[in-house]
Length: 586
Image 1 (cartoon, rainbow, N blue to C red):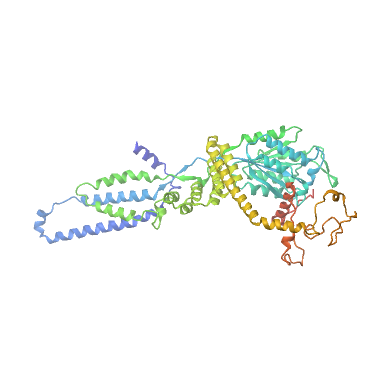
Image 2 (spheres, helix red, strand yellow; image 1 turned 120 degrees about the horizontal axis):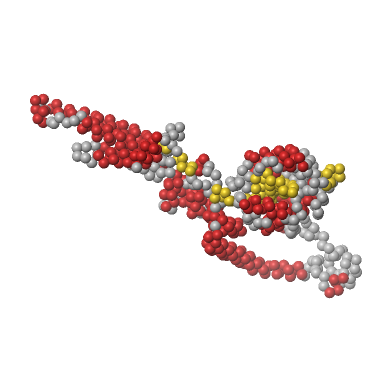
């Protein structure tokens, strides 16, 4: 059976792909050549002493041995040693495919917030209806992690990919045209932002574009992008066939050209859905996303290993080695010397450990010895590298590497690393993703979530204790300060009893003995301060050294729209200064 398989393997060698996995092992032929040379020289030296015996007596002193008695052992030694060296070098000519990993797709919602989306051909307007459709789409449960990006003249990420649909619904309600720093409808900038957000997504996913109209140039851009990408494009058209006037541009009607849609729909990777009064439009999109949720990762070129065929030379090498134990074959010591020369430097401490072990095996040996940091640097496999970083205490690097693994184990391990970093909310999301991918992990995940909550509770307790300690420490001073302010006649007091009806024009009998109270509103630099965006030119921001103590910051607005507006403005100033503007201002 072995010879039949060996013949079949040899006859099907692909010489174009033939190479050695450990080609440096072929340098061992140099010491083998030295050993053979020494054997030949010693053979000649051995014959010289025969000349010391008289020629007539030689036939009685020596037996006429066969010529092959000396040649055959040396020949078999050379063949056996060569088989060992070539086998050690790892000859190979075919690849062994590794099954792909199961990965999960995502969906990115791109919402158009341009001025044309404020048209009122759809009640109450296109933007409001699009936001309702976002909620309906998430309520239809596409089961994929979703992200949100808003665009007009510039494109800005609103939320990264998350499985928490509630936060997406909440954030989507604060989106409006007024928060966009640049007006227009810039599809090229949107596609750049989509590429940025989905650059680490390896599963074929979906981009859901909610817009009102697409012209010929934008349709060409979308078609070219989707054909170069692994992802699928879903377009939800938020407009009516008759169109409507754009607010602020009474002579411009926003209307979709049917010919453009017809040409665009011919692309198999693009699906166009018209707006409906009910939620059947987004339900169909959610069903298509959910249907193609899990994928087997593609077998990349670097995800394949070459078959090491060196084992085929093991049997002939062992068979030849067995002959070295025969009586009269005095070459055994050569094999011992050769083995000592070839294996004496084998190990991690050798100058070339890659000759003997793979990178991952070296990392495993270091990890077994407790050298986790060194093991992490030695590992080539991302999963093993992440585990080594976690054990070494480098939780940030471990979390980043675990994020590359979209399997249930990868999400669970990422949750553990995030817990160590104190990012408990993100850790809980990772644990929930792990349960979604593998329900059998529920018990283990629940324990980890409880442990994370306990750690968070302890951290909050420590903060509360520190705050209480500070309050107790400075409590007496604060009480004394309040008593002092109470006795100050110029200090504003809350209206009491009859004073509640007083105003600036009311004459009273009991005025303060000192000071001048001209109005019931305190006009001080403290109460009149506002948070400035930037310092005025020519002023010293901290000239008096007391500005920080005189400023009372206003409370942040509850509506996240203001926060998004400021964030978009900052992003536009930092990253979108050189962006080509949209061809239309609406």
